[in-house]
Image 1 (cartoon, rainbow, N blue to C red):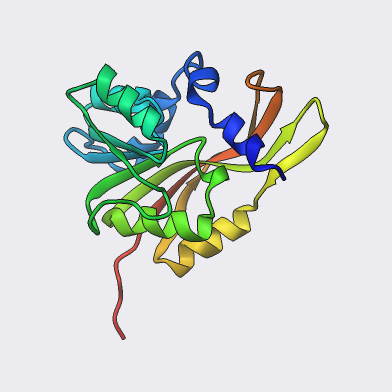
Image 2: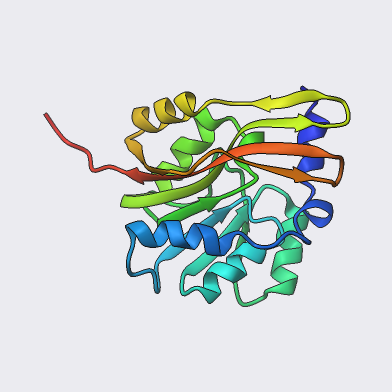
Length: 201
């Protein structure tokens, strides 16, 4: 597993810009849990150049974005000066506890340690808030015929349970082939999880 593969796949300017936004699909999942979404605070973790923050804002959310890449954040701030973007790590989010109703993240978890990033997603969610994520179980380099990322739903469920959350919606297994920056295939699930209230003794 070569870290350069992860960095290549995460290159927004080459990889994400021409893709049709999935915000509408994830919005429908959110609506199944939160019937009223206007004004709900949403954080896009791994926002890249801010396109999904814009799309969710258009859908009525009070959306903002965070990304570990300072270049992406600067580009987002320049292009969308009226929206909020912050440089920060998914494994140590720069926000207070229970700051958001929704945490959204796609094309990001695969280059984090979910033992660190998922607890952070849960921490910044209010009780009853939801995480809406694209969870890659496998990414394959189709030219080299190698797998450079592999994960399991069982691991995700375990991390969620240990940190006070549970899956409430699990989509079907999907796949997508991307041609840039090299030809590779993502196999993933759309997942919605919810932060549960703490029960004492």
